[in-house]
Image (cartoon, rainbow, N blue to C red; front, side, top):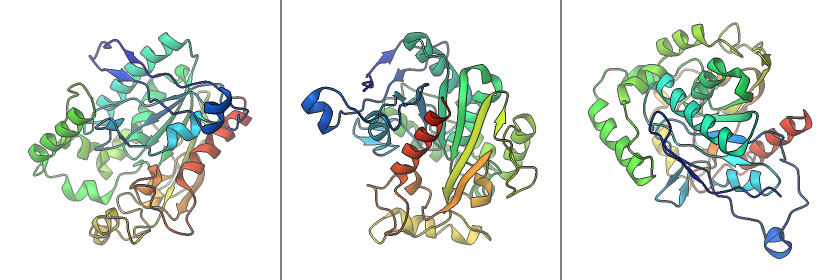
Length: 313
């Protein structure tokens, strides 16, 4: 098994600190020192990119992609979890991510990487693939805001900017972001319907020809595009995020995960946007509390890694 290394790379040109996500070894590795499980052993490393209000690890303990890095690493993948601004425009976040990917590739010798982005991480990784397709093997958008969301439309007034910048600055501080710039207004504008459509005009790879269409190109400039997500708000009685997302339901007139319309998630080859997940379930938060009959969120990441592995990527 390739052991995922914990590393802190030198500050990039954008003064962004980079720390690779540590993944603990499984019991087999603890006993015998290696694993025979290669289910997720992709040729290229996998990069997991967080969305709005996201982080790498909060307080050094709470993972944004809860349990996903270890699950991928334990069956052969090399995994990297960068941190970009919790709130900023897609372009700013994309440049931050690109700088970290270039640093990471320089250190490891990797030729390309696979990008998996959740929520605002979807457009963020699309930006990187658009400006540097030579570095990217695949783009997988999970609950991605690819056509905008009514939530951003409703709050695109500037009223929350100061409070948001303070809050997202705290997240950055407590997750070791190193003082990344926060711009709530720019983030909301990027995630709005208008902002998303403008972004799609410049970065159209994988985007369906019509809203909710299924004809997004699977391969563009040598990069493979995929998407998946959920269409349910209330998923588990014990999940405290459910009532918070439920409060936003009046903003929608179509299936949604509570923050993003299912149709907005579609990009490239659509693996499914009808999983019984809400927006946080898609990254296995909170505490892995998903619906009884819902797909295991972590297993969906493993399946995607295996899909890429079987393509020789």
